[in-house]
Length: 135
Image (cartoon, rainbow, N blue to C red; front, side):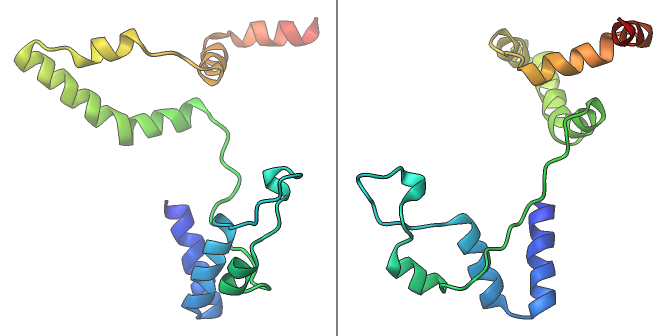
């Protein structure tokens, strides 16, 4: 969210034109098309009315950059900021009521390929990685 706000403000400060910035953002993320039965949806032509409304020569303004790759450090920072306060709250509820919501949640939690990759990275000894590369 901060990154998106940054790009919007940067555009505003570059051009001093709120209308241009707003419509450029809309043009990037919203598109109305005319249905064409013999074509894929992604190939449908832009609606003439939408093009008139948005401004045909208006450039889209992208509010994001390429995401950072997932790392353990990034995950730990996210847990500390976003997840741990909720976990602490659930633990307090369990202590006071005996109702263990976290235990119930964990029963249905599934790890993704990304999680398994991080587990492998963090639990493989450096020597084993070096030996694999030599073989």
